Image (cartoon, rainbow, N blue to C red; front, side, top):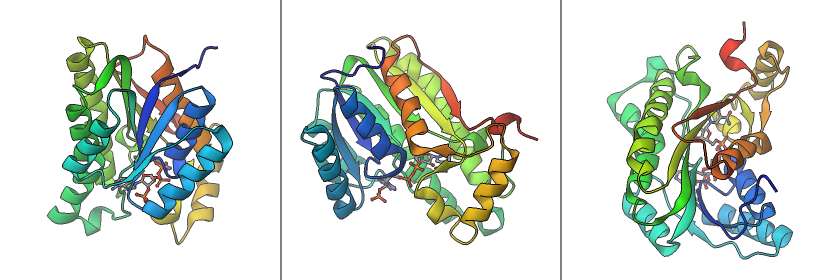
Length: 247
Ligand SMILES: NC(=O)c1ccc[n+]([C@@H]2O[C@H](COP(=O)([O-])OP(=O)(O)OC[C@H]3O[C@@H](n4cnc5c(N)ncnc54)[C@H](OP(=O)(O)O)[C@@H]3O)[C@@H](O)[C@H]2O)c1
């Protein structure tokens, strides 16, 4: 079996819906165990229940914010030692260039960059040799969208830190990689494009080489590949329907 996670323990921060939940399902199907975390305890409980019903495996969950370094560390310590740390969970708000303030720019970095960064930093004594860390950035780092300056900056920072942390973690046999998604059909788009979601998806689909946007499961396939392939580290892999090269 190429994609086996038999008896591996995977922590997923942001595992209650979207690509994180799809990854949790895939891990359980591949014989692994998951512990999931996110902010909303009700959504987490429902996700854990549905994962347990499908797999027959117990799924512990913890309500936390990725911005809360102490809470994230406690979650990781509770489940240590573990094999993989996957982090699709951060809060992305739809503000654009003209609405940029010091406050909302810091807020954005605190959630999507500093949250996962400190989790990775703090997991060093807790993660097993042979394991990996998976960040989620986004295609905007290399194919910017007008107005989405902060998203592009954060994604670029995550892509860069991936390469650097891969060196730092190499000596303990832990790999570090990032998934850079394009437009994926997840609940995030209800938040980011609440007023024009259907129109935006149709517009993007018409421009993409794939002719459609991605699914949460296709994002999860990326996480599975990065966890299972022991020869891949320091990489940012695009799952973007060809958005980088579209007209
Ligand atoms: N979907 C796309 O089109 C797309 C495109 C480019 C990049 N990405 C990136 O890919 C990653 C995953 O995206 P997705 O579409 O799967 O997102 P999603 O559908 O919004 O799911 C996000 C998950 O993270 C949790 N979460 C949100 N804010 C959190 C916080 N501050 N602390 C802890 N957990 C938090 C959510 O649960 P709670 O709300 O209960 O906390 C949920 O479990 C994100 O980094 C996103 O920026 C997505």
